[in-house]
Image 1: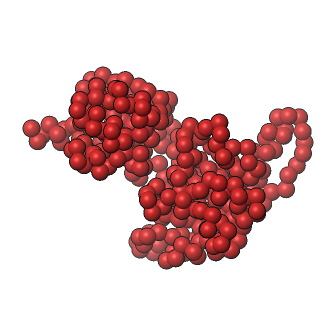
Image 2: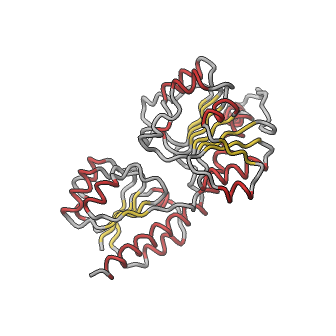
Length: 316
């Protein structure tokens, strides 16, 4: 079988995931993603399967693939918003992903961003490297309130770690996990997202990108629904926020900071509206890029592909 591998995390990180893939006897080609529709269209029909990151598997790409050899899509990672799942269903192309393996890494990244911002570590590192001894005044996170929007696997891990740091934790989700909340009764679950907007000093986003969540943080939220001046953290999907509203909110002091591991368009564009703005920290989508997380996700992605192949073979 001929496989296209585009996840750069998978490619760049040695470990058992690579050993497992290499032991299958596949012919593996690599591209460095995220790969756009125009790059995939001329080549996708040549592959039996893909192990992909956030590539553009549009309806056109999938139809072209189905006309050729494409039979399976194994997503490295959790988010499926870049894959046209309706087209996959219509064409009979099974899709798998890797839930429940990157939550520790991403939760730690959220807190790393928060502590970096509050302690001015990024600014003071640059300053000392330039030979300066300028000293900023930081803030403690202890006793502040973090509002978590989306209490899935990552949200739960962040909630536990935030409480351990002395933060008050409030969380919102469309589903209420009673078992988890009963085990961690210091985490306050709210039924109305506006309670997050009214009470939180930090707002961390952990929901998938859908039509309902696109621009969840928008100009109306920032200018009319926030009661404090929070720091917003986004390690989920760039389209959850209106970037221009973030810039305006910072300018008008409606929010205190924006900490992002994701952008609407990745890699970062030269004209990215969030670049070079004071009180914005951007990391290049590395929240789950730890040796431990990559190995777990990569291994699951390969095993998912093997499972789909075996299931298809058993039906013949």
